[in-house]
Structure formats: structure tokens, C-alpha cells
Image (tube, rainbow, N blue to C red; front, side):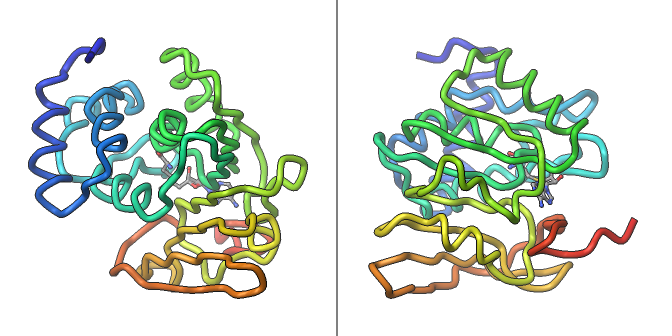
Length: 218
Ligand code: SAM
């Protein structure tokens, strides 16, 4: 069922941008067909919501390209009973997708005005299993740890140690790791005391600003 407008555009987006690049998770594809990305993007860019690109959401921040949302979600592989932490709420779109796939989501946004926008976007869609926290996500959110999945949607020079500490055994962490301008999409899987790391291509994200991320240059 597709209860929101522009369903045809979403179906085309999923076909041409997501499936054609090899994403297969059927629950993820359904969520991307149903969740109205244009609700998360302020005008005039909402017109371009189903194009193959990131878009501005105000305050110098962006909503990620749909394919990157899909790729990071597939790498995270959230299960229906999983408790997930997202760092970098932005528009709230990625959190809404995760909310469809997992049991509960905590998402942290550093910029209060961006957090307010995301809160109203999520309320508009009556999404109730996403908890939004305003603050420095590089510290994680110990009160609700451990998490079966942690997704960082901003560029980090290294994986913040508090996040590694809050990752459950058998859990997965996905993040763009590298320089301020270009990063490698990285997945970390925790198996007991073992950490298994894999790389999944070059990406470009806005910086993760915080105690265990980049300094604020502004
Ligand atoms: N996931 C978002 C979406 O679906 O729209 C896109 C995230 S955007 C690329 C990156 C976000 O990370 C920005 O909103 C930025 O303010 C936020 N951010 C940067 N540093 C942060 C930190 N230390 N803690 C939490 N959020 C942070």
C-alpha cells in the first residue's frame, strides 16, 4: 500500500537508482517505495526529492542521496527486533526508514534547528518508534545501549570509541571514515572480542563535529 503522494516517482527511484545498483533487501525496498522522501525536504528542493542526489535541508546540512541511504541500510542489516542508534538525524528520513525495519531507533542530532525540523517531519508521518535526542552523537547514548546496529551519517576521522563500546555483541556499525572531504564507507562487525572491518567504496559526507569527531571550524 502506498498512502502518500508521488508513489510513481518513488517506484521509479527504487527501480532505477537502488535495484539497478544491486540493493536487494525486500523490506528495505518496500520502505523506500512507501516513505515519502519529499516530506523531509524543505521547498524548493522537495520538487527534486526523487532525483539521484543529496539535497540541502537548511543550516548547511543535507539529506543523503537515496542510493547511499539504501546502501548504508543494507550494510547495517537491521532486523525486526533490533534496537538501533543513528548519529546525524538531519531531516529524519534515514531514521524513518530504519523505523520501518527495526524495533526501536535512537537518533542524535547536534544542531537544534535541524533536530526541530526532523522532529516535526517524523511527527507528521506519525512515526512513534524513533526517539530523537539533541546533542553530540560522538558520545553515543549510553542510557539505551547496547545497540544491534549503529549508523553514523556524517564523516568521521575514526570510529568514536564510545560508539564501539555501545555496540552489542553480533552488532554492526556503518560509517563514512576518512578525511573531511572524502571518506570510505566502512562496516564494523563485533564478534565477542573480535572486530571485523570491511570497506565499501568512496563517499562524501558533511563532517561529524564533536568530542570524538572533527572540530567545529565555524
Ligand atoms: N541521516 C540524515 C537524513 O536522513 O537526512 C542525513 C544526515 S546529514 C548528511 C549529517 C547530519 O549530522 C547533519 O544534520 C549534522 O548536523 C549532523 N551531525 C554532525 N555532527 C554531529 C554530532 N556530533 N552528533 C549528532 N549529529 C551530528
